[in-house]
Amino acid sequence: MKETEKALVTLLEAGNTVTASLSDDGRIDFKESMQISLKAISLIGIFRKLPEIKVEIQGRTPEKIAHLVAVFKEKFVLQNKEAEEKIEQGLDVLYQLSAMVFVPKKA
Image (cartoon, rainbow, N blue to C red; front, side, top):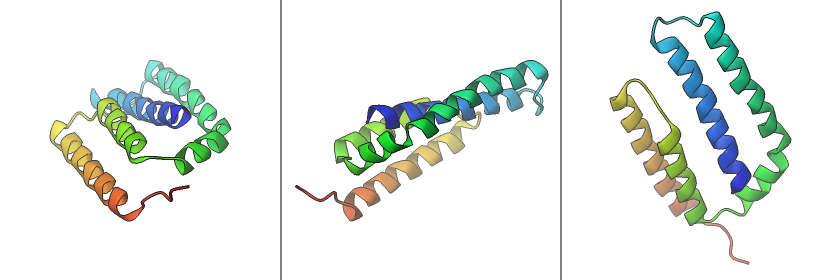
């Protein structure tokens, strides 16, 4: 799930850049807009890799999904740590639920 993980990290880093830019004064200045633009450009790579990401997701295993959840929790950052913790707990619940409901077919 190499490409899927890279896409997830790219999305989270772009979001973290926007959040950090807004956190000090609620505005995005020119320098911050340039930083956001550089992160946004990297999002193009996600679209180019969508076919590979689709294949990786179709071949998912519980271990690979657990790894993606761990990566998300490591890279996901909010200023409000309580909200961040609740979102991460919600993600854990969704993962557990999806693991019970969507069991991949065995070949």
